[in-house]
Length: 356
Ligand SMILES: C[S@@+](CC[C@H](N)C(=O)[O-])C[C@H]1O[C@@H](n2cnc3c(N)ncnc32)[C@H](O)[C@@H]1O
Image 1: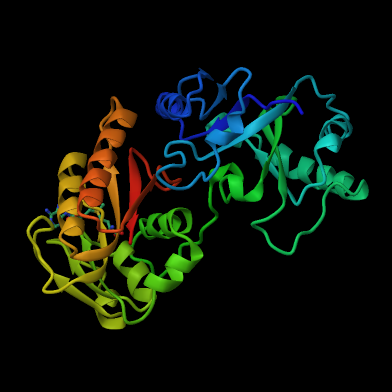
Image 2 (image 1 turned 120 degrees about the vertical axis):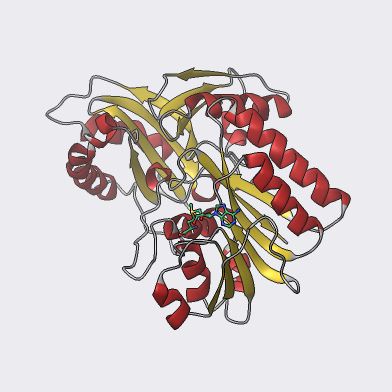
């Protein structure tokens, strides 16, 4: 069988170098070598591991030992170019045939103005392409979405791109690595989506069911106006929201929420809490030290927090901070695991989940 020795990687535009730095490290950890082909602000890159299986780098793509900066990454089978505008479907179906059958198709493009300009083309192409795949028995329903094989097409423009495939459990949950989450009108802020995406990306369904339910308790440090507090409280978690700023008033009247006008860095819970969430805008080392203190002292079971990133050396900063946290937790045998990702809803930051 041919070795697939390159990955197509999608990321937030501007974070291509961080992806490459992370992949350099992960590749070296496996005793392999690799290099990137990337363009600043393109929102994508390719990662090459000549003669070596690149797919091993994207297995378990959510979590600390998965990849942080890539939104999604999958092994490339073949590039295509100069598709005839009159019929792009036929050559691509022929190219896909030896790889199938598939349980789903993902049509991906860069998250840039230029890339989003392809949406109309992709909408029309998807219909025709999926119809042709079904007619040839190459696209089949599977009972469980987490199983099966996914066919990926990445379009640089409407005539050129790469094709690849991956097992459903191996790659991001979403096309383009972008979740389609709906913000209910009662949510106090758009940040609410960030916490929801963090749960879906960084925690398993079993962990969510265990920790996210009535009877649990939590604190939200830097809570105002209350998007994260609302996410926890709507699952029945009793939340103390710490912030000198104001919370959306319906949080206090309609949900199990208490507001404390205090300082995130000095407030202490009277007893162990299930949840610690923190979205304060501060130096990443300061936020991490606060989280570390809570977790090594056993003051919370699960933490989700943001690390706002400096403009330079973002991967190196993240790696150093997470290693520090993992070291501190391991030396105390707290039984926590550390996971991190730059979520779609993260800008110049990453989100970390620490789960017991
Ligand atoms: C990005 S906002 C939080 C948004 C919130 N997660 C949401 O979903 O609506 C950051 C908040 O942290 C608060 N903050 C910053 N430093 C703080 C501190 N030392 N103590 C308490 N709150 C702080 C700010 O007042 C601000 O409301």
